[in-house]
Length: 503
Image 1 (cartoon, rainbow, N blue to C red):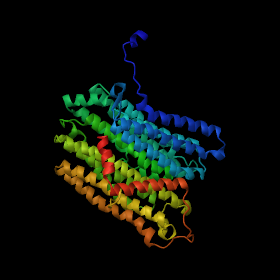
Image 2 (cartoon, one colour; image 1 turned 90 degrees about the horizontal axis):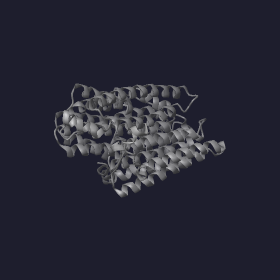
Image 3 (cartoon, rainbow, N blue to C red; image 1 turned 30 degrees about the vertical axis):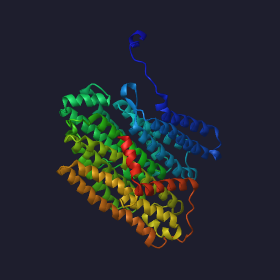
Image 4 (tube, helix red, strand yellow; image 1 turned 180 degrees about the vertical axis):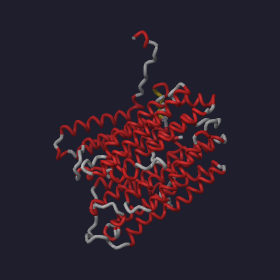
């Protein structure tokens, strides 16, 4: 056996490039040991360890970005470049904010604590690996590393039937989507003879797309559509979001969803996107349909909701549809040979992900704060919030207005880069999708501002008119997300430069 393997190259490990993931793994181990050794009354320290570990993981991300050198390992299957670093930073910050949302929520409930933060870290580790994956195998393993911990987190309220139902639905649909996606990937490997995305791209550039390749690409996209809850593969999302603990719902709607979109970017941009435009027609029509359906059904369903968590769940489906629009623009532009517009379109997806993450995490932070007093997620429970806690009502108004795309908040810039990408792509199909997106942007205004009307123009629903007491970690999360939403709205060039750094 030694003689047979002697000719194989020795793997080269760039420890600096792997440092963010190594820090997260070390933090996971320390959290487990601390949970085992610390008395239960000191279990809050596991959240502190997890939060500090994530902040430390940002240090190598910053040093790698400052260095500016693209690093490749394992024959090109793992790449650390500007794109990967931008997304790693986003995933780590999103996980940190999730922990800030979770500290008092978990400590005040009948939950296991240490395992909760351990699972958040495991999923975050998978997201960071996903950002650098340039191979079908590493991409699939990273996606499952993201998903499997979230199956458990969705059922964290073990004595709640809704939480159990949420976890089971999420698990079953997740397994089905993984099977479909893996089957599509196996067909791609069977046709091209490689799992490396660069090799797949080279093969398709020389040979084009036959019927089997088109089927393989379609099955892979369907698998990812489940992961990002795109219509018609969305039916697990509202029940799972409502049944899960609210911090977990925030994590699913932002970080986990972003992981699915990053996987979709990786396989399309690095594998199926060709300068010749030969294969673009094999995937952009499917994404056109998914985008149009997700925006329309997501927004129309959100209009009917009386529960704010379910409303935000359908909002997340609609926002996912908006994020799919630049993919279509990249496909149309690529088919027409316009490589500049295609790259800008992929940059638009990254910018939209970052802005959506801040808006959604901030909104869920307010939902958690309000529920501490009302013990309800009904929109009617927000009546008169401005009279009792005006600061909380103000920041929730900012988040709702930003999600609706109202300037000068960050959401308008997310919508702007999305519309710019599809308009610059041209063609009748692109214009038609742009019109659908514009109509849905107007529809979204009504259900977002229904919450604003309840807070500002309705009388207080309860006799308790005292201000809501917000725990310090929740204040930190609300403060950071509010700052991002306001600053990026006023100075959008900051995130625009991040998008340019990524592509």
